[in-house]
Image 1: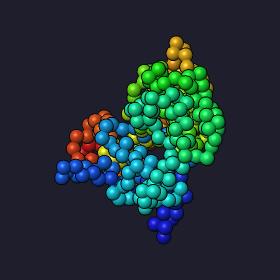
Image 2 (image 1 turned 90 degrees about the vertical axis):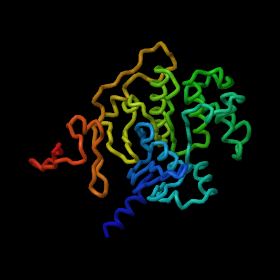
Image 3 (image 1 turned 180 degrees about the horizontal axis):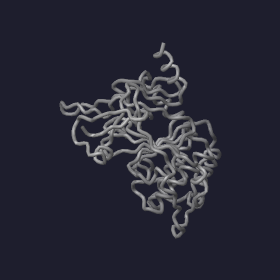
Image 4 (image 1 turned 60 degrees about the vertical axis):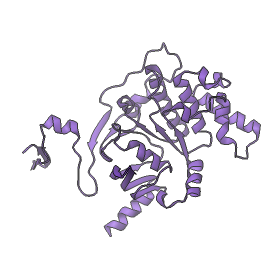
Length: 311
């Protein structure tokens, strides 16, 4: 009976991952990128998945975007199991529901097309007229602060501006889920902050769910939830306590001379994640701080609190 309740809860969630496993085989060697990962994403959420290189975060993004399939476990979108979709169904899923922004700008834009032409490209197979496509593209470029550069080629734009065009392009088909892989990795500090504020603006004004994969810890200050991934599993989460403090920071600006917005250091509350088997992961930082250097720990319950210490 418990199992049925759990399955029903998963089916009602917007995005659910349960026991997600992904194993790659290369030159006879098996690499486990995801190891029983569990995660729920809520509709309209602005969240970041943060982890070191090789932690499994990009693999997770590929599965959520329908670009890859899990080796085991469930990945559900509105109750639909993505692993059961064939290639044609996955292509339709990506076209109708997903917008992608990648780290490499060459994966996002065609450099022989102008900004407005790049944004128009995903609308090629729609029933919109040429005039409607152009109007839609201009509106999106204006939404990301580039209404004045619609006829510029990507090479005439800064790194931050190129990513703004990439975001506008990803939004062309009005996706409900925007997936970004290291979107701020190749831009300077001013543009990083401005892009972060843009993500929040789009999330609030369009209601779009945004999932950002990154190793940039500064992004954590400007999202509602931060999920830390380590060795293919979720290790901890940080939940935003006061959204108003973020909303009240400096408005999005294209002026590189404007002072950067600063946020308080204690905006988030951090939680360790207890999986369905009752396991909790201790990060390297936690073990180091507690002086734990072996595979054994001592666990005591003291005054209703669980205390983990070295033996």
